[in-house]
Every structure is written in C-alpha cells, then in structure tokens.
Length: 472
DNA sequence: GACCCGGAAGTAGT
DNA sequence: GACTACTTCCGGGT
Image (cartoon, rainbow, N blue to C red):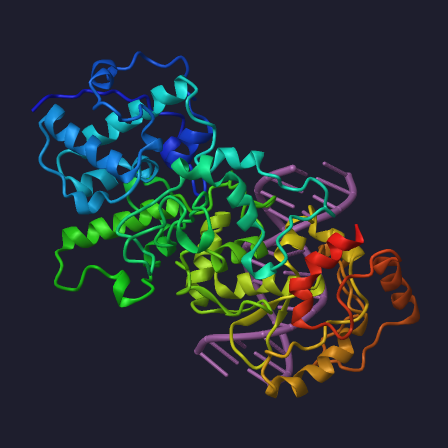
C-alpha cells in the first residue's frame, strides 16, 4: 500500500468553525486561507487521474466519483470501497470529512480525504471553481433587481426559485449536491440532471439530519443537544438500515446525515435574496424542495393557499437552529419567530389545527422585499379574511382575533412593539387609543395598499404576481 | 403537558 | 449607532 503523506495545512480553526460554516464550506468560501499553498504532493497523482475525470472533484458526477474511487483503490492500494456508500456526486464527496470517509472506508479515509482536499485546493488555485459550492452561475439568473419587478411565473406555490433555477439550471447542474443513500422518496436518489418536477437541481438542499457531533470537533457547547438530535427518516423507505444492521453501518448512516447537514442551505444559495437566512425563506425552501425531502418536517397542506403543517416541530426547529447556528433552538422559540410574521402578514396561524400555518404572501413577493420591515409599507389595514381551506371550526375562533387585529401594526421590528395591542384574550377590551391609532396610521402610510383585499381569497396568492406585473 | 400567544429584552449582522 | 430579524425568556390562555 502506498503511503500518501499528504500534509494538508490545517487552516485557522477550520474544524472548529460552527455551522453553518462547515469546514468544507469554509474551504469554498475561503479556498486558500493558508497562503501560500505548499506544492501539491498530489501533483503526480493528478496527472494520473483517469482520463475524462475533471480535475475539479466538485464537478464530478456520481459516475466520476465511482471512477475516482476505483482509481484510488488501484493507485493507493486501498481496500475496496463499498460503492453503495458513495452514491453521490463529487460535491457531496468533497463534503465528507475525514471521519466520514473513515467510517465509509475504514483505513482509507485519511488518504481519500487528503486526496480530495488536494484536488479541491488545486482546483481552487487554478480558479476553476467559484467561491461558492452552490450554483455559482445562478447569480447570472435574471433575478429581478427591483423589489417591484417580478419574475414571470404566476403561481406562487411553485416558488420563485423555479424560474431562477430554470435559467441557471444547465450551468449549475454540476454543482448540485447529490447524496446517497438518497433521502428522497425517489428511491433513485436525489434528482440528477434536472429531471424532477421540472426543477433544475441547481439547488438541492440536503436532507436535514443530525449535526456533526464528533468528527472534527467542530461544534461547541451545544453539542449535548446536537447529540440528541437524531435523523428522522421520512418513511421506512428512507431507512435502509434496520436494527439488525451493524453498528458500523449505522455509524456510516449517522455520518452520512452529518455530512448532509453541513451542506444544509449553504449561505451562497442564489435562489433568494435571503439565502435561507430568513425563517420564511427557510420554510419555503423546505416546503418547495423539488424532491419533497422535508415532508417529514414540514409539508404543504394546501399549496395553493399557502397552508402548511409543521409535521415535526422539534425537528424543524433543530434544523432552523442549525441553519442559524442557534443550536438550542426549539419549537417554542421558532414559533415565536413565526408569530412575529403575523404582524407583517407573512404568516398566520391556521386556527384549530396544531402546527398549521399559512403563508399570506407570495414567496416571490417576499423574496423581492429586501427588508421585511418594508412590509409595513405594504400592509393593508385590514386583516386577511379567513381562507377557505381553513377548517370551518376555526371561523368562530377567528372572530375575536380579527376584531382585535383590525389595526394590526405592521412593524416586525422590536422598536415598533405594540403598546396598543394588549393580549387579545386576557385583555380584549384594550383598544388603540386615538394617539395609538394615529401612530398606526402613520405606520401604515398611504401608498402601500397591499394587493390583498379584505375579501382576500387564496386565488390572490397566485394572482398576486400577475396583478403586480400588470400594474407595472 | 403541549400548544399557542405576545411582551420584553437581548443579540448578531448589516 | 440605527436598524432588522430574529432569539431567549416568560407569564398566561386554551
């Protein structure tokens, strides 16, 4: 067995950087934090890479990965890899940590990892790769620069990133991440080459799962919670291993999930102007995942009307916490954030149904709003009428609330908290004083009559875009 | 007890 | 420093 003594320079705190900046992501963001780079010990090996194998590992297809692994077996005299554990593209492969790789191919993880790191680094050196792991070319997509210009897709449920993907799809494809075992309902794995639902897989969020807890020592004091967070497979289909499976295999699964998690909504995600950093966007992206990989966490109840259900509140909160690097996130906290969206009419609660919410705004509309607080300028003074899909039993429940919310403020910021809005239930008589009313009016402004009308219907969501376009 | 609500203060990023 | 979008904590209602 050849000895590959690759001394990868260890970047500054690379492995200790908390999510969402995984070591791998850091590598992408800051490809060469340790300049000047040492000469690549892989120089020879690279020259011997199988013909047709792109020098940039992150551009590899699954087939390329297979070819590469086979090549590694031969070249470095490694034990045969279990190819089932490497059903992924190059980008996903590069996301695997040394530990991950070691779990998948005991005894060869270091070698594989170092080879990959070298290839990645050298590719970055050559400027072959963009700074982001995610759909770099999508930036050229015709994302409307103006908050009032909208892409042409009229159906909001499809979500804005549909067309953005479409535009960038072809060029972005090589950078999509496909991981295996595929968490998708699609047993064939994550979408490849843009075949699913007409979406291009330029952005393929990985299955949310357990965060890295052991390898790389990357996380901090919240690791206790992290350790408790176990992957929640969507269906029996998604559990390729059963209890009878060896611990080793489970570890590999675990590792797999960890790896996926590190890729969760990389911050350079081009599909929106918020990159999943905003909660509504995060939810939208989970909901609109082309392969429906997150339906075990959150799922549409009625996509047309924006009604969705949080299937696994705790799990979803964990995901959100990981996304925001608030690892102590729980549903209580996340739901508080959701409740702030009530104010700006981004969300409403579907009364009478647990964990059910409704988007009140077209995601494209939201994505074109650079600043949520701008919504205060778009607020209709009247609350949205209950949507038809909401269960009838809720209607009574809504009554008092609607009355209370009549002059609902529109500012999401804490600076504009709601002195006039006493607790609806505990203090139903507290109404805005004249002075407060005045302030509300000032907040609402004049020119911001929303497209939503008092008799707002779900159809408005779909039509909202259209009408806005026409107005322009 | 879980869910839901919203006030209040704090925080990280811009 | 102002602002945003939460996060955290909490008391209270369902």
